[in-house]
Length: 410
Image (cartoon, rainbow, N blue to C red):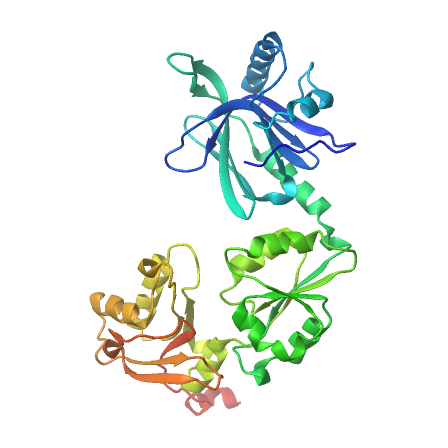
């Protein structure tokens, strides 16, 4: 957990809740702690070691329980404990102070037994998770442990955190952020709008592949190379940057395709975001395969959550005779989560599809000098190895020109 810091001058306590049980947000939670939860203008604090008197604590817990039984609103203060007391308690290194700017996600859930506040935050480049509940009764032997929890409405706390993050974000008046699609790889597929946006920014952020695509226009720029594991810290640092800073976060292809998880987070961090679309490998693969995008299904497996529903979507589309442009899922570090062409072929075959007669194209490194194309039946994909930069095209399109619809001619 974060080490204690300080309460800034003028920083006010928004809510102060006692008898709070904090645990790690994981299946097996060890080392739960009882304490007080504070939310201020800038921080969330959990105080498990306090110099407040025991008599004050016991009376305050009773008053809070009565109040929360009448109303579930957790926005409250307690007489006998103020800002100076909080400053004093935070000198103890066992107490925690989390800047609101480091909170990645705050949410809540109503359980049958009580109400839970979930918190995900960044600490020293790692993601930590905690859950908090308000306790009504305790078992005191052989060790103190919650026996009954209270049902409260955590929404005002979650809303306040989000509002303060948005209000304190410098993006609205200080930092301008752009999400820019730079095309599938070849320089000629970089649009003028994307090029102009990048040239107009002070800082350019991106994964290696996207940055290589625009290497020729990066001269003199502050370039930040990131990975999925370390990107959050870079975005947070830039969001608190100097006044007038312009930041471009670049993505291979079109920023509106297969990048929604990152784009959503950029909107949270920077407060506002300008999106510059690009040319996607989906468009290029469709053009090379002569598959009209308005008559096919486009499916991307580039998500971190389960792809089972998308796999069913793929099977149904092909069974229905539709053409499909598919972006598989490479995951070298987690091969059990990959869904590459060989996996696709095996899945479709197990699903009863006629893979021996189904035609498919697999494009690797589209538009680049080393572009490669596999064309054949789906069952031929089993056992074949492909790079991570690929896209698949299942062509089941039947031409239907305007000559078939002469009634429209008037």
